[in-house]
Image (cartoon, rainbow over all chains, first blue to last red; front, side, top):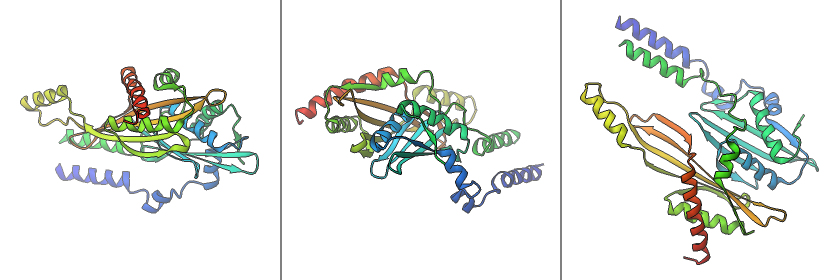
Length: 139
Length: 175
């Protein structure tokens, strides 16, 4: 009985963990770079990077995040939401041409990357409202 | 033994991909406006650096260590480790042990995080709005996370802002 149980346990462990290599986990190689960027990126018709970053910060706070760090020069903001789960998000802002800024967000839910387009759409919808500007699809 | 197996399987489910992100994780909750108001205070100054410096001083008063700061965007992120032991849980654990239920894990320590964000508001940026948010993660005696949450208690924010007014005054006096 005991050895049977041990066998079941061991096979379960292999079943649940043996599916991704460290390389795949480190580089998230299964996801398509182009598709991911289009889900995570929006363009805004403004060139005020500082104001955009500040608006990103207050939007994240509205969504229940606590900010971890921000860098005006690089244009990045990171924040974490704890609500029985840990949702970590990094948002970057950089200029695109003469008239636009590109805002990109990526998120991690506990130990998984967030790839659901709807969640990013919801984030940008909140950001749009706070910016008083429309978020354009970037491609 | 069967109990052990059940626990093991539950743990596997918790630790792997069987959980999905809640659909409302990135939407504004109905409470978000009230929370913003509770966590925000407006100051009649355009000196953002001064307000940030006073906040840093206050966070130090409260025993926080500054993890990160960015003056240009008005941010201070800080944290501290504290005990999470509470009498109720310990009494319950002792009770269980006395009844022969073995040792029950109780909350042991917690990481408390505080983050201050300032931004100029008003027509000419003549006011500084300051929003502070707190959250915590609690670990039990077995090193598992038992709570991870935002701290939403009006009394806490009220006390913070009372102390901040004092800190701004003290900074002014260079004490």
